[in-house]
Length: 423
Ligand SMILES: *Cc1c(COP(=O)(O)O)cnc(C)c1O
Image (tube, rainbow, N blue to C red; front, side, top):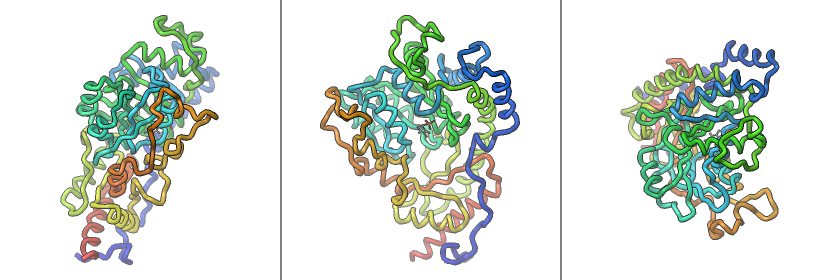
């Protein structure tokens, strides 16, 4: 069959628009509406008014149970969760935290807000932190590493924990995009000293905004609570072993807590569907020449919310992506040089330029930091090379089987069509 590609004037595989790839938001039903309405009708919107019946506290128990951790703290967002997690670990001025070059800018921002500086490490083909480069980036100032389970893909936690243990580093997992995932049968967020989740609109389950910090360490939990509320000891006597320090207001409210509790009950259903869709797509394209499926460190624990394809180079990936779009498939690049995507380190403007909110240029200029440290847009060439040849298709539970079929058909058609065309 000699099918002409849509990009060359042929008939597209489909002209039916795909559903928006919303996960949690698309699952919202009457239960969410009722749960929020009940809080509003009860007029107790603030979590510490009635601790026994707090929805935020209920949500904390759900996350503690899911991850098997002793403590969970609900906060106002994923960035707030990272800030409280870092503060919980006592990370601040003079400390370095290793972050991957492919993560949302908030991972680096949280480090800076705590007074530490991010050290950017390469990713590997899995799109997550490369444990070998992580080890190369360790200096005497390195206190912690922040593996990020990007797009629902679990990091290689065995290798990362091994490097961290050998060098005495703390580990803070950024699970903002991977709520409900696991690695070799163990939940993401339960490997490091701290795990952090986000409930923002774009994540797996949502309350519009919101975040969760989980940890087994009592002192870390205590410090995280102090950071998240300037008067924490007023609401909760806390652990006398941890002396209070200034906090701010990073609290979650009861409407968010109630909404998130209902969303939590939908999580496994959402993920069962995205995993099935992705399996179907991957099986359908396993034998396609010239296109590889990105190697996930654990395909079973992976959330299945992203189909990740890798081409030999940037030019071919760009061409392939455009051809897929012409076939009606919502595919995108991960490092499209025309879009300043804040998930790619070279577009983290205030990291690249050492931006500061104060007139002394802190934290960059603190004498406790290595003042010779520099940042540049080409400092992680491997990360840019990998992202440049990677295409992603975001999947959602709202996709029907026919959407998966169209994706498979289009990938097969484009792979054969472009191969023939370039001869
Ligand atoms: C969304 C996200 C965050 C920040 O979460 P917010 O709730 O938006 O503050 C942090 N890290 C990663 C990887 C994210 O995707």
